[in-house]
Image (tube, rainbow, N blue to C red):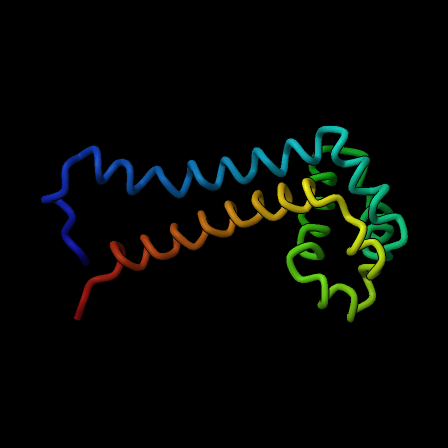
Length: 132
């Protein structure tokens, strides 16, 4: 276990809270996309993509929870478009014509959530295990 007791309290508190703030920021971005007109823009932009139709068929536009799931699933297609096109759940033309501002927001939200998860895992490994 790494001893951080010599650090000031504000530094230890900041180290603890930073991943949560980053993760909540990412969640707020994704929540804003799911709860605003951006969701309709995303659906209209991906209308030829089978992945979106599959998500919407599973209840993807009825509640905020399902909208969050749909935005997260479609963000995977924005991060790895070649994979989505190859697997057949993302249309190549939809990927090329997707609005750049929305693509950036979707990626930023997901990267914040993934960075927060990575930081939490790193800090748990750093502080949580005793060295042999």
